[in-house]
Length: 203
Image 1 (cartoon, rainbow, N blue to C red):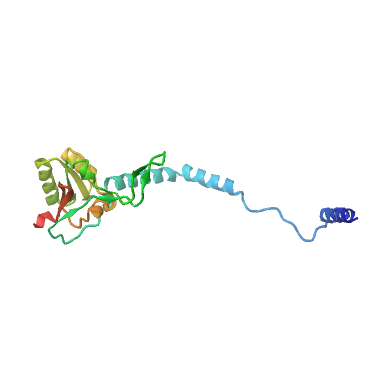
Image 2: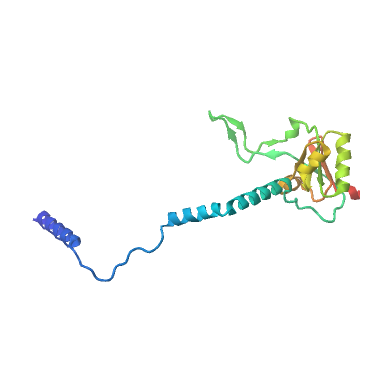
């Protein structure tokens, strides 16, 4: 009996839902333009008007300029000579296992890369906009194997001018890592440490 009542109720509800309710107000056609068509039209107008080519050329020039003239690394405006050392030792905060679960590096293990590889070149950090620093770095690079690293200036132009590769300390990552606050600066290996001298032109 209960099933019969439930079936009758479902049929009644379905019939009530499907019935014609009539018109209760004025209806209008959708007046808004098709969004996809509008985007396609704007894109076509952008290309046809020549603005796309202008925008493309300007974007390429901005990218080239940004590549050739990166943002300078934050350096002191009042450099003072300083000599200090930096320990490259790293300590494993957690153990490292191989795929079989064997411990390769126990947690707490301290490793100094200089115990395994030597630093064959000194690092020269300098501001490429300062002619005195450029002259200093060029002279130093001729005296012993060196990597020339700009903290500011046009590294690409300087590479062509000097006829050798010049690097750039992007976002000041290296100088920040070593704790360098003034240029020109030299980083050399000294045993198991790195010896750092900065502010060398005021020594």
